[in-house]
Amino acid sequence: MAHEIKLPEIAENVESAAVIEVMVSPGDTVEKDQPLIEIETEKAATEVPADVAGTVEEVFVNEGDEIKVGDRMVSIKEGDGGGGGEEKEEQQKEDKKEGKKKKEKAEPEAKGGKKEEQAEAGKGKDKPEEEEAESEEEEEPEKGKKQKAAADRREQDIEPVPASPSVRRFAREIGVDIHSVTGNGPGGRISREDVKKAVREGAAGGGGRTGISLPDFSQFGSTERKPMGRVKEITAENTTASWQNIPQVTHFDEADVTELEAFRKKYGGAVKEAGGKLTVTAIIVKIMAEALKTFPAFNASLDIAKKEIIYKDYINIGVAVDTPRGLLVPVIRNADRKSLTALAVELTELAEKARNKKISPDEMKGGNFTVSNLGGIGGTGFTPVIFPPQSAILAVSRAKTAPVFKDGEFVPRMILPLGVTYDHRIIDGAEGAAFLRWTCAALENPLAMYLEGGK
Ligand code: CAO
Image (cartoon, rainbow, N blue to C red; front, top):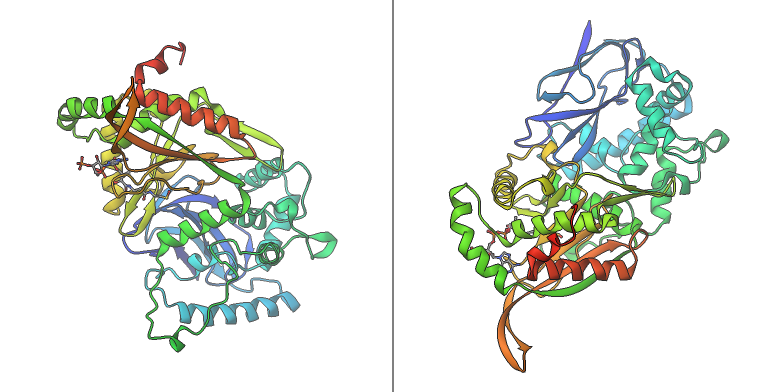
């Protein structure tokens, strides 16, 4: 009888997921725990594995579909998944180890169990993916989306690397350049284990693992363990990947926003009527939309494998939102084409949704640049970490009234401290300084940015 794999409950209040990749086709033989479908929730891409071995009978979903918890994804005719020998034994050993870890972790959110753990660095399964890869690499691209996706990924490599698509994807997700990994398989083939080894040898681990061993804290006092939760887990993965792979520099400057504050107060009421709040953040997003056109390197991503910089013609800006679950970054798309009022309304709605767990994964995708405003809380400056694969992030700290020496005397002015962290592989120090100076000048005199026509 056919066994159906449905979208399991992934985490509390997550009711749907986007299908990112379908890794199997009808007729494929699969093993237990072999990844079948890659889905994305929040900002996490995770794989749903087969919970039985057998032959794929039907695939009910397509890439790009938005599916709900309980929806059918794949049906499998139970049987022998094939394979065996040494690798299978190793797999079973790994499963055993994982089972033990799972118990220790006892994360209540992870009701879906395996798929979350599969997405984590260091907890994957090598063998089935190796097999899948072998066939994928040999088949014609027109045989299906799976092959096309694999071909697209191959094209991104300057030199062919002997690694399966899922191993490449795994490396990409944890921020490891697959070209820098030494393969220990036949003919130098790179396995998921090799990627993990490369991360371990590169000091800290990917995916938030740090290689830092913990002491027995109970010797110092009582402790309580709590699951870190999915959002913080994803933040750990992103920030670790960023920290390990991007040489980043933070540059600081200050803007006199006295006039801008007066403007904000004057027009706040009108924006409120439209359903938004004319905040410092909304104004900064508007100004950044112009800044990114003037400084395209800040709206770009680096493809290190191809030694190319990808400049984007669209302006999508992420805004860091502090929520009870942790940091979320909704994205305002085509920010340059929206009025200040429209931006303020959208930002109010997105921040609300993020805080009320109503934000969809789609609303957090596709950002080119991020604005992080901690000014509502306080601080004179901070060094935010770039959200890969973006090239920069703006840090906004707390504005305060300060004495400024002007025309021979000290006058009280509202001063806003700003910082920009940039990827030094794409952006040089002089460009970083120019970008922030331009931003300060635009905040001080917003109309000046429209003097340069055609933007
Ligand atoms: N300087 C001085 N005051 C500021 C300020 C700044 N830079 N930024 C905000 N404020 C004030 C606002 O004026 C507002 O005051 P009033 O209530 O008197 O109007 C108050 O702080 C709260 O602001 P807000 O939260 O309503 O609106 P916002 O647009 O300024 O902030 C958002 C929106 C989503 C950016 C913010 O709520 C938030 O979540 N910030 C945290 C971002 C974060 O965690 N970043 C770190 C990520 S790691 O890089």
